[in-house]
Image (cartoon, rainbow, N blue to C red; front, side, top):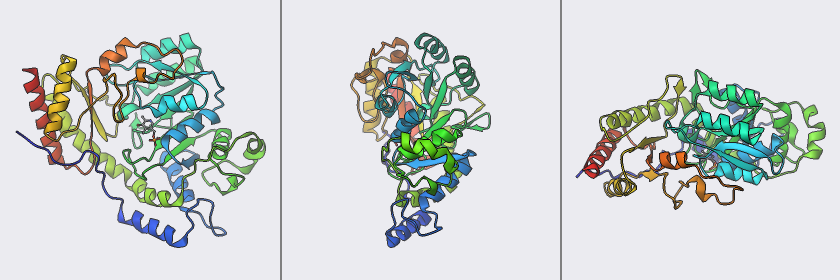
Amino acid sequence: MKQFTKSFTQQESIPESGIDAAVAVMRTGRLHRYNTLPDEKSETDLLEIEFAEYMGVPFALACSSGGYALHIAMRAAGVEPGEKVLCNAFTLAPVPGAIHNSGAIPVLVDVAEDYCIDLDDLDAKAAASGAKYFMLSHMRGHLADMDRIMEICERYGLFLIEDCAHTMGASWNGVKSGTYGDIACFSTQTYKHINSGEGGFLTTHHPDMMARAIMHSGSYMLYERHFAAPAKETFADIRFDTPNYSGRMDNLRAAILRPQLADLEKQCNRWNARYRILEQAFNQCAAINIPARPAAEHFVASSIQFSLPQFSTEQILKVVEQCGHQGVVLKWFGDADPKDYTSRYDSWRYIEELPQLPKTEKILSKLLDMRIPLTFSEDDCQLIGEVINEVVTAVQG
Ligand SMILES: *Cc1c(COP(=O)(O)O)cnc(C)c1O
């Protein structure tokens, strides 16, 4: 019996240059982002400048988490309590949580067979709900057809917030994920593409929205100390009208993120090389369905998803269990009982008028998920592919 022994939650270490930079910050004692010497730019300032440059956008704000960025994106966009916000039914809990945190009501949209948001259901729910906002989660790094998304947004006048927690470094037709929408949010939490434990970014090209986001993030009246930010005149009234919801990035975390951002493209290629090995293995097993990725999609595969369309729930649970015995940790998104980081939409019982989504439930009931940490070698991925194929074939009987 093949056995895999590495940890699925072990990330790579922080680059030495990041560790050195973090130690240097600690030696100064100036960990707070606004604790600077005259004319000094803090690590957080530099990180924001570099991230805005990387994304090719005018404005970037670093903050305390991805979920926090999503929340203040709602606020900066001017969402009113009780308003409806379209979002994926297949996403992570911080997405409906951020909508709820702004007082708005999530309108859940089905998942499609390719694990992206279902564009027909999006169209129908945009029409039926009258929602003016859409928080699109590029869940597990799957980019929906962005041309069609933008066409739907234009047709209904939807304000688009992109949740790019899994698409930092990804693009559609050469256009970066996060530059399609009005606002984009990113996470730098440990299991995303750059790792500061906790952290996030908000980017936008709207000056007034960035001014509000900066005020919300807890800038006090220090907004002039932001460099990937709009001119100070933009803040003239906004500084009086915008509550402080403290959620800043600090210099220690910024220091360890900067070298990782510089390395991001290289890391993305390493993830995808691992993904292609697993994908190729899965394509050799008739019981496994792994949707082909569109040519327009340049993804970043920090995880992999696949389905066992013909398997019963009992068989799926057996696959998860047996793979677990052989050291391969799979997560099942179809579980009615939320576990670990997976929770099905119907476990978010705080949502008003929580719908039943039989299509989503059916797709999720067959869907498995696996992390691909970069501490796995390409040979490791080969072995993992073999383990999964063997288990699936055995369980199929
Ligand atoms: C991780 C994640 C978030 C939120 O990020 P945190 O930094 O953990 O708050 C949002 N959306 C998705 C899809 C995520 O995976």
